[in-house]
Every structure is written in structure tokens, then in C-alpha cells.
Image 1 (spheres, rainbow, N blue to C red):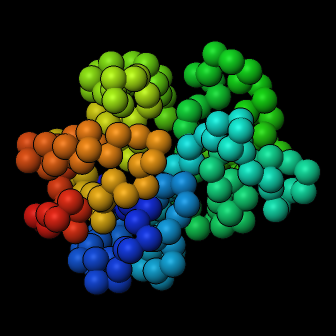
Image 2: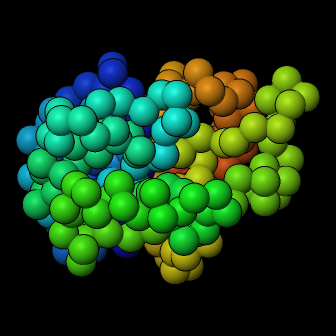
Length: 207
């Protein structure tokens, strides 16, 4: 089984998508936040597909177009709700059950959007633990790693021996809130160590 992690890369091309050799029965596509790859039919209508939505800081929460007057506590919630039938599972990061501060407000916000409860999943993630584990610091200041790194670490810990994680069109281009240089080095090391593989990621295509 392969886990294809598709980057939120605005320059993602159909030629890159066509390099993905998919086993329709077993391979899983993993999309993030803004769902840019959904513009390709090969991705949009692939059944074994999940998405991961990262929570927004309170100051950056957007007004919901789906439910006027409400805020979206997680990224792109309205769009994910409207197209939830296209996803096998929808993950919220961080999981409200792991939050120390006001988790009920996040649970209520997710419930407001009336997602199919059978699709809702969570990734166990503690920012400080992850940053410490990976020795991640941005300009000497402790900060959170990107959603792509969290997903990679999550699936790496859960995959079977012969499963592969494949990065598609990763270039750390949407890392304004993270350390782009650190992330680039991290993924290049992971690729070099065969912890994951690459399709048009960081100038590498090795699968």
C-alpha cells in the first residue's frame, strides 16, 4: 500500500499527477487544507482519499459561507463539508480531545458543520512533543511544524513494512508560518534515508 501525500502546491501540474501509479484497491491519497489537487479529475474522483484540516489561530478564522455568522475554526471547513462525499475520512488537526484549552468550542464548531460522523477522525498531536522530537525551532524560537510533516510522521509510525509514503509536488512553498529551510532539509533527509519517496518534490523523482 502507498500513501500519496499531495502538496498544496499551486503549480501542481497534470504531468506530475500522471506520474502517480495508483492501485485503486489499496493506495491512499492524502490532501491538505486548501485541497488544490482536487482540480484534477484523477484526484477528485479517486475513492480512497482522505483530507486533513489544520486549526486556525483565533485571529485568522474566516467567516463561514456555508453557515453565515459562524467562524471556521479549522481551515477550509465549508468546502470540506460540501464535498465530504468525495472523501473516505476527514481528519482535524489538532484533535479537540487533545486540547488543553477550550476543547468543547472546537467540538461544537465541528458539529455545527454537520459532517458525517463516520468520516471524522483525529490525529493525536502535541506541538511541543513533536517539535522536541524533531528538534524543530524557527530562528531559535520554538514553533509548530507544518501539516505535511505531521502527516508524514503520523503515517510513518503506522504503516506496514512494505508500505511506502510518497511526496507529490512538495517544495515547502506554503510554509509562511514554518521554517522553509528546515522543512526542506527534513524532507530531503527523509527521502535520502528511504523513509519516503518523491514525485517532483524538491527536484527529486525517485519512484
